[in-house]
Image (tube, rainbow, N blue to C red):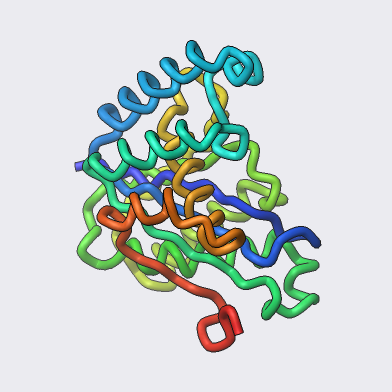
Length: 218
């Protein structure tokens, strides 16, 4: 059975904001997730024409009105998915590491993926999908090679890892928008103490990883 790990992030690794989030929507039901996101965002674009004109197929969570974000979170909470995330408190990350954004991003991704993959996944095909607008990754190849080396060679897992970089504004990338809304809900919870969307997703949230563990939010 094919498993899909759909990733997106919220926040930035620069000077603005204290937190940075990478969220993963984990599902075996790719097509139903695609269909419901396409349908719901299509309706939103018709109702809110000013948002629909910004992009061909997407309404980014950062641009969406609260009612849209609430409804998408409500929909996601009822789907056959699990959401996991890692959130970094940049106040307690060394400046030298923050200067190496590509290395730091890959490191956070590896920590998150360590919680998602295990020996139990051997023999499975794991599709790792992420947005091609990700600005934190200097080289897509470096991330893919880093994760392959870690899981297949270092850990010795017999996994078929398939990576796919998708344009979130493409007609076939509505699942990436699901991860965008999840990441935005988590980021809003930590950065702005806005809990409305985060609380809706609690029932489908699995792994909550805080970095660095000992000094997070201190």
